Image 1 (spheres, rainbow, N blue to C red):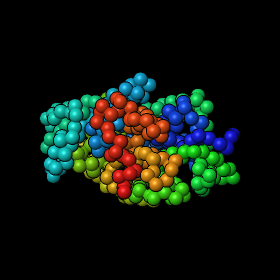
Image 2 (image 1 turned 30 degrees about the vertical axis):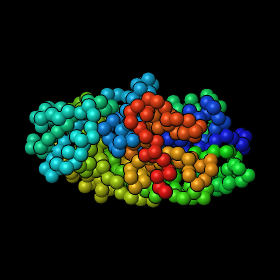
Image 3 (image 1 turned 180 degrees about the vertical axis):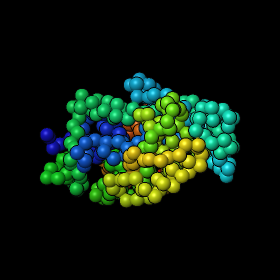
Image 4 (image 1 turned 135 degrees about the vertical axis):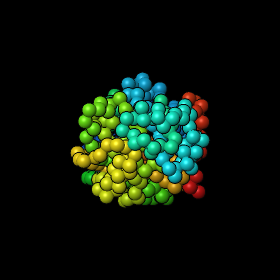
Length: 364
């Protein structure tokens, strides 16, 4: 393997893999991944939902712009989403409806017809989003890795970055016993984004990983749950999604943690399952499997995408929160354009996306 490249991307999750796939068409690209396989952390632990009404405005714009690519590669399976409003969540309901597009309010009776487990009287109001879907995350991720390699790009797993130094107008990046050199670094290292930035001498952006826990429970006997919608309360204290004939239940937790190999918090999961059981007539008697993932945010909830204003050749691609999978097809194109110092793709801009809202320059 050569030690000199045009661009080094740090991180082979969905963000790094998708951006690298686009950049490899015009540049010599190396992707460094600390784990023994790409997508080990957040990418491989996603609830895998396409939710165009989920997240702040830049995220919603990117998700809408991503739809065409998802459809083209066959990575979506239609699944409606139900948002229910129990007692005391009126403000959350109003906030959801103020920002939504394509959703419609339905009666609580209609909601129970669509989700037979819902307890009568729990939902005071309900909303249907018919534009949501399950995402085949592995198909999407692998498609980008194949595209990257078809352009001559290299993915080096088991190469944790241990040092970054500016040297003679380029970057020297140490990974284990190897040192690689490139004009541009793309920091796509997820929860470790601020640590990578600090190695390079960049001012950190306050990136905060937050843990989300998920339990897999058996479906209730006598029901085929796979045609059911994803359902959750508008206050985001629980959600439930069918998967592989079972139910994924999450407390929708967002517990601040340090970057690490995340695992589910049993107490938080138990509280979330209790809230779920308040909403349904189904008793969870057994948990088959649990896992945890990290969703990383900066203070305003928007991603950080663009060149560092103080550090030449250092490009940020972090802070996607829980939206990294659903935005990847659009955000990767935006990132590649900005790395090349080109305009945001016209179709993404047409959705209302403004690169200034995600620029590292907004931190002053």
